[in-house]
Image (cartoon, rainbow, N blue to C red; front, top):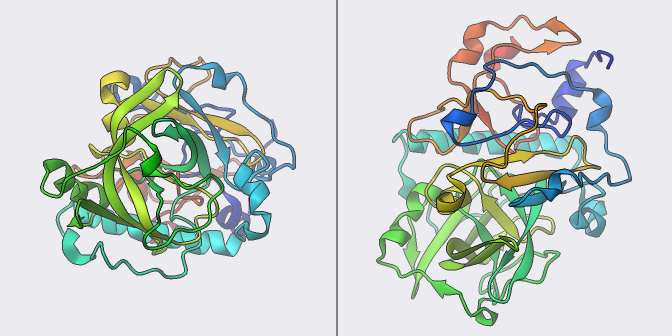
Length: 375
């Protein structure tokens, strides 16, 4: 494997590191148990420029999909994705990706400020969220397919380690629904759907997961807004969630969206994988012990997987210790010690990386560093 020198311009526009999470060839794992987080404290990885460029042919990772409790992960804009085939004309440009990323990073900083108590969760009205030029969900280059309801309806959802609540568009779309690939979920056709009552402790728990105080309209109403001002508003409900034929969860709490805006580009909604008690890992902790791992495709033309539970790891997997970004933060973090380009370590002071840690976010395309790193 030869060393490739990447120019700063190319690095800014194309470096799909997603905050140094796993790629398919190396198989990094992200797990929430301390005993599985620190096999190795430090690890370096060489990125090949060719691995960032998609092929027109899908290369499935069939071996990993044989694992129990695993979902197939595809890049939303790659040839392995049905969404890509449906919406080729609207694949974002490099400039759009950069703008979307910048908006998402700002929203992450706001969420961190809220978790530290420096911002009031009541500042945004859940019944009147603004819709601006939202290009994507504010997360979102990777999707998985899960089942919801009884009988089960398959839905293609973005998975997001930087969000907590899971939601999908729901009929009758009393406000508005954007166009999605799958049929919009119909609660009236499911025998296991039920709304959450307004005055319940479950309804009140929404504030920590969404940053927005819940409202009441015959039942509990959630609201969630993303960095690009895209949003979803609807009924907070419980339903049967099917991950695989052997992994079925009754009374799973999720958002049934009645007013959803932003160019979500075909996905039916979003899976929240954060640390909050309403996230999917937290709600399934009795079975999976709060453990999940994922392997992102090494390019947009290959597939990866999202696995739940301690499925075991191959010898090729490298681990680093997860750090605490904030005591009350739902984000996952790591500590960066340095960055090298073309084998040459960049002259960035170590204090730049140790100031606050780095957030691992599956919805951020470009690796963002503090402003002082670029001086």
